[in-house]
Image 1 (cartoon, chains in turn purple, blue):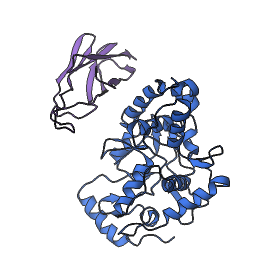
Image 2 (spheres, chains in turn orange, cyan):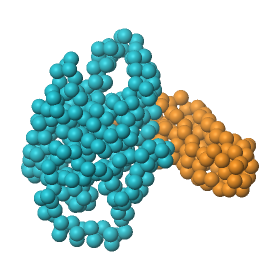
Image 3 (cartoon, each protein chain N blue to C red):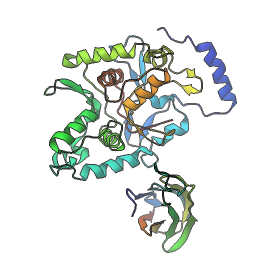
Image 4 (cartoon, one colour):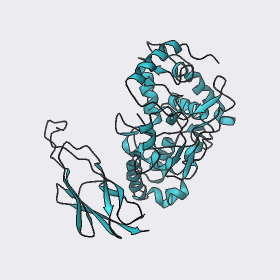
Length: 109
Length: 285
């Protein structure tokens, strides 16, 4: 696991059924592109988050491939319709095989 | 009030900017962070200031978009660095095997109100000390660890973690008593013209705030929002790094971050913001 990786997510605590809510996510990650060289001229190996997914009660909401041009601490914001109470599950996949997960519940009210 | 020698020039420049459709700052917006912490961004100037009636946080000079970043901690990129510092706070370092938390507890308890009164006279050391000096004093003498460099990521992140605990409290640095001498030295530096361009701090930040200097909207140069996350370099910046940048822009040899000159200047500039709220980490361009 890369150093200092910390996922964070902001989801409203409640929504009306059928409402669209805005979800904000950010994961602190250095997103090393693999293009840069260190002081001795050696290539710094690529180390990025390459995939991000969000599921709601097991159903896919968003699934994105991420590329090396994405800058440090990738921030993803999107809207999702909430049909019922349940859990949003967020997953980030790291080049080194690590998987970071975060879950947020939302109630109907 | 001896302001505005640049006014006619600026009026034209501003017209062009408007025509280009750039977002102008909303000067009268109110800053409430997380819908909870009310920040004083305008207030009456402290008594010692002779030429300015109302002091304003740098936040009031920024565009709507930049202002919005600071209204919610999730949107404030500076908070990532605060989280990083929280980990360091809880981690033991040095020969004594102590962490910050071992002596100070949680930062919410141990550090509340600290940022607001620094730089501050330290009786035992017989000098005015900034937060950075105090942090390194702890590291060297209590933790027996290597001191951090003034501008290192660890140091500026730690000062951000400490600042967060005072957000919303009024800046209130003491300028009388034993600190008076250092304060006077800082004031002298503030009004001294440096560099090939022969500019003092006051030339821009007192005589011409709210005017444009080429494309930059000059603020009053308040430091209540430091350390500050700058969009231009995507990291937290210390007060002294900002001082250095400003003096460099006058084409002068600058003082070093951590030098006695900058410590004195920090005390003086902080005192010009007495009454504004602590905002750190703020977001600026």
